[in-house]
Image (cartoon, rainbow over all chains, first blue to last red; front, side, top):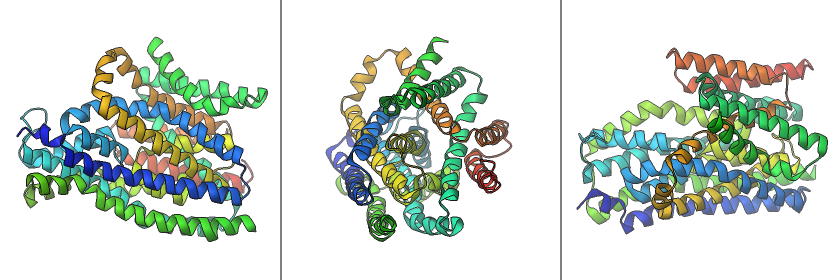
Length: 231
Length: 223
């Protein structure tokens, strides 16, 4: 049997589907509880609904990016694994690397030699073992890191606020810097995205255009892309 | 402190309990496809091959298993950590959605209300992402094949634009801290480019370096 037939077979769809159902279950569970507790803590329904709506709008752009990377995974490890790995922790680059490491451990060089069933099975094993490290460590340490942060900030609200904002600035400075240093169209996209965001932020503040808050990131995202294509 | 009681006394214990259950269940269900391959097709690679595959991938990304949850924790908090590390796509999807949601709802990052709104936003993004990917998997080959290559290439610019936009969004609120963060990011990305430091160092040092400087600047009343 061709390994692709196995890779796209019903048992694999079901196995992948079960894992994805868990992610859906968790999202609904956490979402519902947040909504309920948010209400009890005095957040208005309008605040929470507009937060959800804006998140919906913002999700679309990045999801398209993930989707466009899907193709390369589809042709190497089949639909179920591609679907599961990208909905579960994982990214296209990482999964391709894991799959090729796995295949190589059985003596098959992905992209050069033809894949066989055992090479595919080992690719699956490697993708799984490579990705559970994140889940294991995060699940084990989330509440402990919470306690540590509480102790560190001693409940000082100003300190906690500055920690989060500084962490976002640091994280996204680290993410954007490689693109800036490339000095190519990626740099143009990064700068254009930033400039558009700056203009939008000023508009939101000065003119109080509230719907712009919800759409701002999506506009900056696609605007930055269009500028990079044109320039 | 009624609000605080709701968050620390009711919300957080619930999230931690279910976060742990779903997290460990997530680890188990991850093995589903491997088990299905064995049960239905008798496919089980030799232990040595599994071990070799594991060692190579652990060598390549093992450090990141620890670095990422630690680096992103100050942004996404306890509920976000349980969620983000099951569903992935943290910097490109979960954090952007969380920050936009907070901004729209008018709550501060790092507060209890901020954590609630961020979790709501992330939950929505998980669902949207899964639906779009499902459509992509079932109809994706046709859709993607129908798009001209120029459009697919253009999608590559969405991510840098996103990173630039989020950075600026927060730079506006902390204009004195932002240049410092960017300088750290640029210096370490340059060192990574030259092969002098491994790439995961950039995120770690940028996050904690900026945090350290930010807290000190705030204590001195500069920001």
